[in-house]
Length: 378
Image (tube, rainbow, N blue to C red; front, top):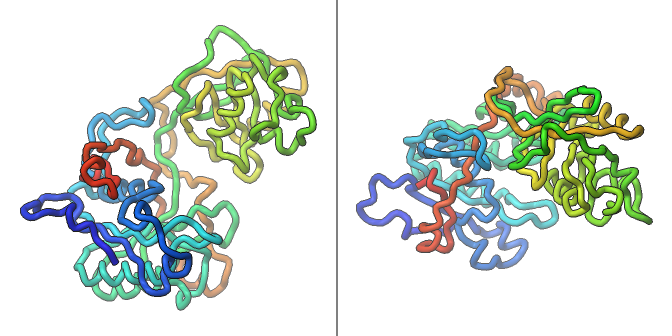
C-alpha cells in the first residue's frame, strides 16, 4: 500500500481529497505480472476511469463545464461537498486481468478502518458465486461496519446474464439515459429525415446535398467488404470516397476512429449506423468531420439508399431536446441467468448519464507529476 502524503499537507483541513492510495500486496497484480514503472506504480489515474467515476460521485461545483462546447453549464457530482478518499486497485490489462482480488480486498480493509461513510465501487467482473467474488466479500464486511456500498452493474449488455455486483447487501446501479440529447440530423434528397446524435464541431451547408456512399462500394482493391463497411484503416478507396458522405457500420474499431478514416479518405461527412447488436443506442461523439450516429432501423434504411444514386446532408447538432429521462442503454448489463443469482436480487437501480470530468488543472500536475487530478476534485 502506498500513499500520496504530500497531497494533504498540515493545516489543509478543507482539502477535497483527504487520502489517495494504491495497492501492491503479496499475490497482487505487481507480484504476478512484474514490477510496474513509476508512472503506473502510483495513485495517478492514467486511464481516466477513476476521475470519471469519482467526479460523478463527489465532484465539486465546476462552472463553465461543457462537452466540446455543447451542454454548457455548471457541473457537480452527486455529493459535491463530500470529502474523498480514493483507492487505486486496477492496472493495465494483462491476459484480461487488471483488477486483482487481493488488491481489491486490501482497499476495502483500509476504507473500513479509515471510517468512510460510503464506498462507490465502479468495477466488476463476470457474474460469479459470492464466495468467489472479492467485491462481494469486501462489501459484506463494509456493510457489517455500517458503510453503504454502491456498485456498478456493468457495461457488458445487451446479452442476458451479464450483470455483476448483485450481492443483496449492495446497492447496484445500472446505466441509463438522461433527458439531454445532442441531436444531429441526416436528410436525404427526398426530405426523409433521420435523427442521430453527434458532438461534431462543424456541419455541412444546410442548402447543399452530397452523394451518399457505402464502404462496400468504396472499398480499396484487395480489401474485404466485411472490413471496409467498418471503415477500418486502409480499407477505403480515396477516389471513390472523396467529396461524399460515407456510411460506416458500428463495430470493432472505435466510433471516432471511423470518422477519422472517412476524413482521411476524403469524405465530407459520415453517417455512423448501428449494427443489430447495438440496436437503438446511439452516442454523441466528438467526430473530426460532420457526422451523425443513427440507430439500426434508420441505418438499414440509409444503407438501402446507398444502393441507388442518392444525395444527403448532415445538419449541425442542436440542443434543448427533451425525452423520457430514464431509458436503459444497450451496454447496460442485464439480469442474471443463474437461478441462485436470480434469487438473490430482483432490483437494480438506474442512474442517468452525466457530463463527467473533462477539465484538467494542469498547474497541479506540474507540482505533483505522479498525480493527475481535476478542478472538480480539488
